[in-house]
Length: 439
Image 1 (cartoon, rainbow, N blue to C red):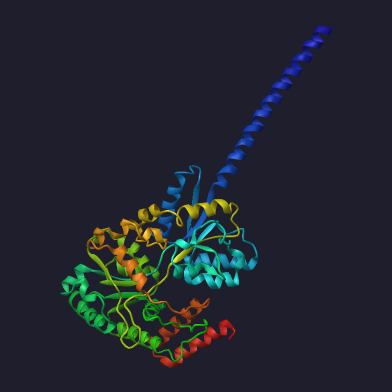
Image 2: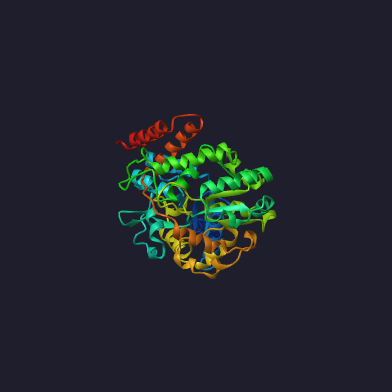
């Protein structure tokens, strides 16, 4: 009897041990899965940027490069319209809840100073991160620096190019040389001739955007603001000349005003226009038209006629990468940016032919890739040209309220186009910015 009871006890004990063992193994697997998921999350960074042919592509190439030494690394790249990025940043900051923000985001350079002044909690300071900021040009670096503290890793510059369809020019009897080192009067003469002989507008742009006027303004080192960052629009002869030239472009029917960005891109990609004057980042859109390879060439922009210090060089745009305060693995985010956009000539060489992204990382500018003739652009070494353009671009006074000034004058330019008095419209723009600034 005792033997029977003892046998039953041993069987029960063994069964319990087996069950405990099974339970233990199942629990281990569950924990292992959790650990794997956590590890995967630790090696993944979320990124917000906006152009699939430009900065999204550049970030994808940076991911592949970093993965060579970090095989478990991954980016969750989310394409967002830039205005939506700004709105999301401001909403998070005003709610004092940064949990909705990504680890890394791209910000337009002219937006940074106002955002960091109003919403400093968004940004991670990078001054002592190990990024060698001395490898970027001082002018570009200033766009992401406040009181000597670095917040962003500079990316692309916005040197302005004049890009033209050489086949359309040829039909009208011109070459790219005829559009080089000219003023706006000569440009309009050529544009009228091109329109008459080909039916193509010379340029296009959004009716509600002052980009063209702002590019003209900077080409002479002029600005909407004085050296102290205060509005200086009234009695601004350079601004008046720029607006007058814009009026003439539209009135002579050589500049096609469109309603939005999509229409602007469409005017280029459908061949409605013979040319584009914009920041060099527009080359990515142009290069997406693979069937027009060999039919484009670039040169500098026209210069003002009456304004002193006029040049054929300007800037529009540019951007930098930032790490948010929400980033849970800042060391990883910093090392990624330091190893790629702030440390790899090879990355800039890889993205250059496809995106036309002219980086502001100084060692990349010395690369032979920048000297290579580009088949798409009539075998011009366009990247070397763009670097040269950027070095010749005049500096001008700016302000944390740059976009407020830009938007105010943009609204008034359209009022002027609809018949408003020029002096009164400019005064109204200045008053609007002064009110915003609390002046």
